[in-house]
Length: 360
Image (cartoon, rainbow, N blue to C red):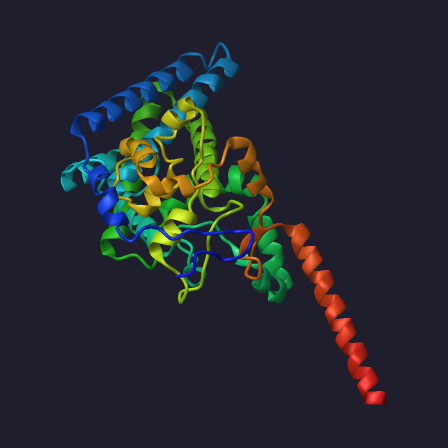
């Protein structure tokens, strides 16, 4: 495997013994898992209660507490996420039970999501296997050769308002209520069972506090939490130095480690997001529980090859739209316009040359 893609984007190979190096971090800790569940669920319930008790007197204060609850919901989703990978507990049954409960709180069907997310991990960074569990990404060539309707749909889908405001609510509130037709019977049943659990939870909460209060608070928490969560997922793979290859050149370790970002956030936000910013480590070994990711990053010597992404530098990701196979990097619409001008110029020069040849 070559050590570099281009002069601008050098990609160092992951050591061949990486599996042995990460093995020590894959052991779950029962007490750390229990403590994470306890503080996450307790704070989520507390903020939810405070959002409800302040709803009548101060909508702004209620929104503040709802936002705090949304932060805890992100942390709960990471617990759900680790259970799906079988990494949160040693026990498969414990992972499945806690995964189902946290899935109900995050409105996510456990087995269907687990299957789709496993496909994402197995194909991440592979240009020939896009489409399941990832952000819709076209190559520049696909965009230029696509129909006007395809380009219109793509521009709408990649609009930040759609990605981070509209799509997250639709994804968690509606889309995940429908079984994936490609899933097996267990995945499909998990959707129906989760729908029943969510309905029961909604009916119970509506009975206790009134359906209006429940709907307002839950929708706000879902909107804020899912929007922030999608941003985290987006920036974990849609960043300037990400790595994509076609199947014949694709390598799991390289795609996982260099196609996933190290999102270096302040300690408080790292805690809220359950260390998922160490996404390069997580994709290299999804069996590492989130509470061991930071230690693995600090200890593994080849982690020094990863350039950290901060909040401010991550904002550039909002301008990245298409994968340029020539430069092997994500580019924006400005580069697309430049490419179009170059293609038109080449076509014009070729036409002139052909006309001159014909006259001669």
